[in-house]
Image 1 (cartoon, helix red, strand yellow):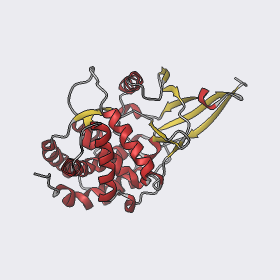
Image 2 (cartoon, rainbow, N blue to C red):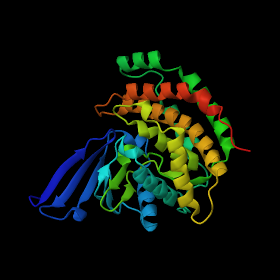
Image 3 (cartoon, one colour):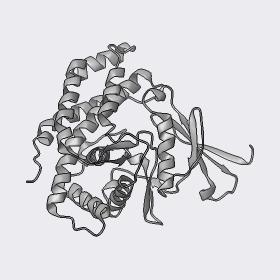
Image 4 (tube, rainbow, N blue to C red):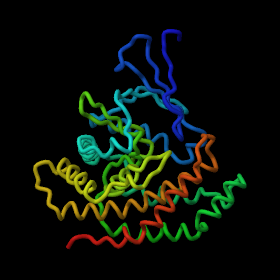
Length: 314
């Protein structure tokens, strides 16, 4: 063991990540070991996560899975750096991300039900919410910053009814494409995605909208960093160009996807607000989950009317 270097890269907000490699070994021989956080099995299907990585490996996408065990995984280390709110807006980087996501969305899977996971997952999360939080401060904060449970359920029902009509394609999605889950290698001019805990068949527009919602950061959320229409338009053009290859991409095509994506941004806010409330109840990680949940829920209500009023092109 004395010949192996161990370094904790980050505690994250759900898992612990440890870098392991032999002393003086090259970077490409590094192995990452991810230890699952307490009670995360309530929210994440770990068998599905392993299956997702193997599905990606068959399609030639990293990271390669080396081993799995009861409370974690060992997988390939991808050299590079995670993104910041500034880097994510650089055209040379977001074009790579758009193309990489288009590649992922074309992966064919045969061992999953051909339906979006979104509504079932969201409802399951909501059903896990406690009637009262065990911590009195958390309960007080919930009462001050959130509508009652039945009102949140009404919002979920409304979103499902409205957004299911958009007919967004069902594809293999990442579903958690936050800044720290994108690795950029400047030397090779490539990007790679990591952490496929929530990957599944889902709406194309949700996956993109969820990514756009992450432009604002996680620990210091700033919604001035949410991509404006021009950036979104350019991003979506790059995505559709990569997705369709030789086919022409019209402004109408981009407009349609733009409307779908921004409507699904609303679901992203509700999804991660409820997720954070569950973390506040069950997680031992030192992170203000209730505050984060409130930020996401407040942004949902702030953008709800504007995004729902967007019309698809005729």
